[in-house]
Length: 466
Ligand code: UD1
Ligand code: CA
Image 1 (cartoon, protein in one colour):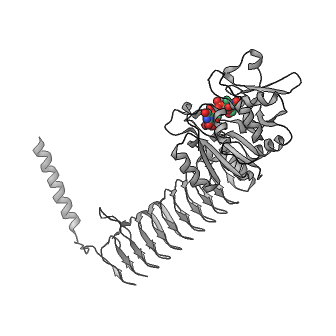
Image 2 (cartoon, rainbow, N blue to C red):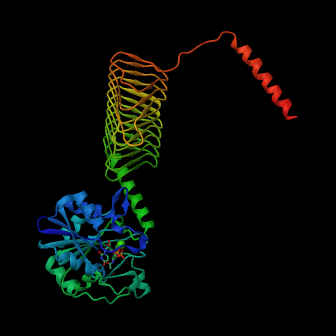
Image 3 (cartoon, helix red, strand yellow):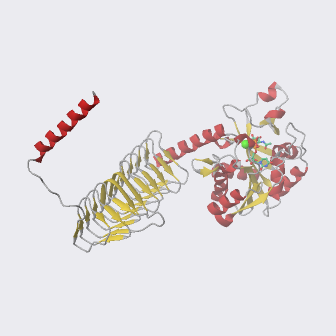
């Protein structure tokens, strides 16, 4: 594919989105629309990808971050139509052949691009068409009596009911030699309802002297996103496609669970209804993610049990760990193999080493919890003094009794015990017991005395009210 450059048209704001963000940066299943367009060409192995933009710095930033130096942008300003955008894109093409398509069609596949490119080697110009259920809004492919392609006419420029009845539409992928495209684009005129230069008019221009073939493909590839209702539609199809692919790869995805575009899931994993896997999340084999969990940029090992409604953000979970229900792993947490994080436990930038446990109702921020240590119910790491965050370090096999506070910075040594209800403000040496609470005193027979005193007080209060 060294003789081919892909030109992705992505300029303009996309006014129909009614958004402050350029249209092609809107995300479908977690990835910006333009990301799908670029990746399809990179997967095909083209020499270079050129993206035509309106000069929005956010698009350059996204492309550089996602694809590095493999993609460059050229600016079309002002946006005067898809034909003008293609002209600008072609100025950056150094190869013999170009593949031009729109940046707003996230369902388009590498396979589709490959087909059009291959066909273009046999004729002067090849493009993709489709026969969708509802052709409204798309350019129609007009052919003569013998089926030869004559031109594409946009919805707004249709001239007769016969033209409106045509159900073959333009899917928006074109391939030809650069010289053929350059020549056709020179001939474009803004003689249409929108007063723009239409890329679609290259079809009539080339058909006037050469062979043009329209290849009917899947209507999915066609779904161009112009407004948010189409964005939603495209996203549903992307989620469906991912679910089907994962199913073939041995991953069970139940009900309405949604796996975003950048996520990887190993065979044997099972994802229950209502789960959302987002960002750069990866899930290991035989892991079970129960109902309602939301994972963003999470790295999850093998055989992990994530119980319902647990939230994980930018954290790691090791093999055979158990999390939740209702656990919250905030950024920078690292739960190692076989560790347990139970219900209503919040971790922030905390490492729970192998086999350690915090099973109930705790806030553990900026901590390092040693192997097999046990953190009791209601433990709080007081990590913030209003100005700075501080560390709490718990040694291997230490035992932190319930309802303890550890005022950081503080260290509890290996094998040490912290008695329930202790506020730890000083380091606890290895194997020591720290206890900081007032000693209990029992007063025999005091119950009866107390009852008499209290009921008398209540009687007097009632009398005073009368
Ligand atoms: C276009 C096609 C239509 C086809 C449909 C498929 C034209 C004239 N029409 O219509 O035949 O059925 O796609 O989805 O081409 N863009 C620029 N610069 C511009 C204008 C647009 O870069 O000056 C980019 C946009 O970012 C967008 C793409 O080109 O990604 C397509 O433009 P859009 O306005 O969405 O075209 P449609 O009306 O959908
Ligand atoms: Ca469009």
